Image (cartoon, rainbow, N blue to C red; front, side):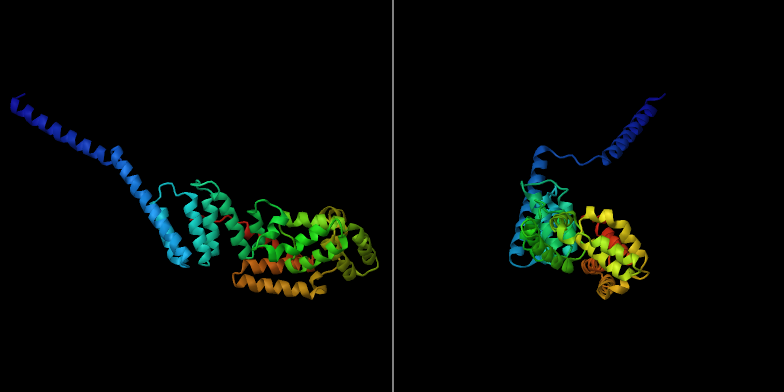
Length: 326
């Protein structure tokens, strides 16, 4: 092979090698020296601190919409996206009357690392407040710490809803009849207890008052045997409302017989019919809290009414659907 041809081949090989090397390097992540990385981290930290501080000032000045933008910018600057930034953002969203979005942000924040101890606890308190103001007591109680009725009733956001039940619970041992009367008052307002915390209080109150409600199921059975299904259903409605879960489980078969004997159980309760009508209107307006409230009341007024029971189950399922984070 001639020297001239060899030189040409070597030049070609060198160009090809450089081309391959360039292609390989183009797919690599940018290389930074340690000092460059430190500078980048410092820049991101400065951006995060500046934007979050600006958001705090705007929120304190009563400008939650502008605060939201600042906190979103702070999150974009943060490499770790810590929970405390999302706590700030959720608080601003709540004050901007974006409750559903604020709840989703707070729930997502609980999956992020804490920059300061106690942030997750503050997030749980914020969720209780958000859901209580939305009228979704069941969800508010899911985030309660400590999970006690007395603690819940002492919170400003839950006090209007639970104070009467808590009072009935505290009276149950020493004054069971007064406790039962207060529970009946609370039940007429709230409707069907839909959380374990509420049902446990209900059972304590009704267990203490059981000497005053004994024999109701037997009275209902006697009325049914006498061919008075509507009177039997009315009596069994009292059993449903004022007997403990364990006691009602033993009486359930008689309750179902009485319900089956009355083809239109809602007909004896104009209150239940009106409440379910209000629930339907609330659903049409996208008011989940209102729909739940009126349906709980309808079930309490006419526990035999399968349509009300079914609607309550469907609404509760929609309430339990997972929420998406930011």
